[in-house]
Length: 190
Image 1 (cartoon, helix red, strand yellow):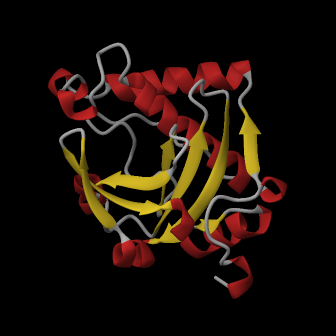
Image 2 (cartoon, rainbow, N blue to C red):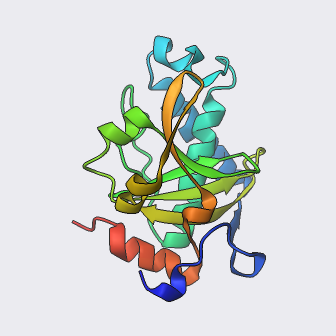
């Protein structure tokens, strides 16, 4: 990526790639999130790994699918709605690009270590999206190549899981121009 697009961190308001979720889109995303959640075995789905209850775990999936949807809208890509047993989705969200989403007001790009290892050959880059806790609004923060992610990632342990994480200031901010350059560089068109 060129030097002019190497601005790091959370985008400023003028360049923000945000999106308001309509009621129809919310209903579609909620159905998809619950289907992904229900694709997991009960011992995985309701374990203490996520520190969530049976009734709230689907919200983690809702955060993820909402972020993927916002990325798809700004990147002119199709959201993968397929469901896979004990996997939720097919691996990377956009053929080489893994989108991670957060409801935290202190966002960082975080992926479970085991998921990163399992998807290693598929992932070329990772992106981060903020999703408001009511799932009605979100915005894209930025992205990073797998190579750079591996050189600067930290290992943390949360909810009885090891995670790799990188703070938002290390990501290339997404703008109308940079998101398309990011997709052109990392989206596997084959």
